[in-house]
Length: 204
Image 1 (cartoon, one colour):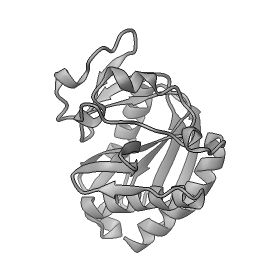
Image 2 (cartoon, helix red, strand yellow):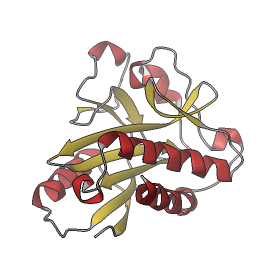
Image 3 (cartoon, helix red, strand yellow):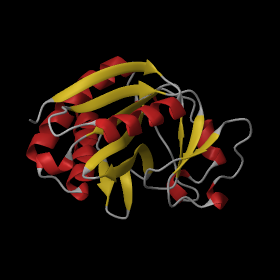
């Protein structure tokens, strides 16, 4: 079974969504379909398992949550498309590296549809336009099943990124679709992204 069920959740609380992902992953059986959860979050900083506190420079009043995904520190906020991939990797015959590659290439394909040349970096997961990061990735795999996923900056206030070292990289520039001349809402971007993700997961 390689079906992908897409759930459009609207704006959700980060911690509640994280709890729901863990519950889903713990309870799913061999025949449970894989799911993609599309959402956006109120302002929140999240720290991955390897995150170093010194990369959180000045969080101010924005909540900080230490989570169980991989990676360092990032910011989520309104205007950012978040896609959580709840995928049975064993059933699909995928390794974690294959899943990461599929996610990155689906993002590169999506940006390419708007004429934006984007690329992944072997030394730092995510997707970049020039030297600026436009999408971040972070996963957790439990018993061969993934959760967490990716975040694509669409039309948001980017200033909170200046109060952290994004992904543990001091001075890393951050960009978004709106600043690259693309005026699109999250639903429109999701509609472009999802076919690319389906294609890349099937071909991974």
